[in-house]
Amino acid sequence: MTKHKIYTMSFANVYPHYVTKAEKKGRTKTEVDEIIRWLTGYSQEQLEAQLEKKTDFETFFEESPGLNPSRKMIKGVICGVRVEEIEEPTMQEIRYLDKLIDELAKGKAMEKILRES
Image (cartoon, rainbow, N blue to C red; front, side, top):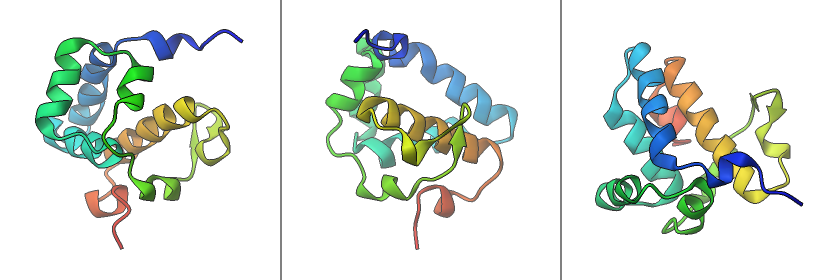
């Protein structure tokens, strides 16, 4: 089976779109970074290194220090598909991130986005 095009796309090329989407709605790059760090376990320095290396999406998630177990609490529809029903693991991680950025842009509180009780 052929890999989806997004797997080979550089995370650094998509990252500015996440930031722009958030900033258009009055949110910040700092909040985008916090979401990415929460999801992946990267430190800020590690995240910046991945961006500098122009790591592709597949490698970005494969090399993540520790995917947050609470990410399984992320539910909802992104691109017409329920994120909790996506069977391919890498695609699900990418869509989790998309969903979190959407929630940020929609004005949701960070505590809710980061699934804090």
